[in-house]
Length: 123
Image (cartoon, rainbow, N blue to C red; front, side, top):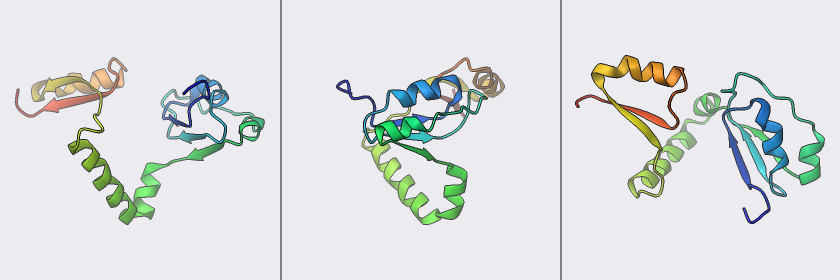
């Protein structure tokens, strides 16, 4: 970030690190609230966005999909094109054969994996 801090913070976790993350944001940065995987909905002092002219933006994917299906399709097509061109690669942590699907789900639920888990129909 060149010492400026991040321009965009994508935050699906929330919890105790939200304020610290927001304090690190660049001038006119954006903090996207995606979810609360940590379980705790954080409180944020409102002087922080003011001091950095930064934005705190809620991004509820489920509502967006329902309210704007046309843009959702366009976004998905763009993401798929980025994936096919190998400009975007999802971080696959582990693959499981179909027979171990239950174990894969347990590993995700117990937070033993980071990134994506892929269940393969055939080993």
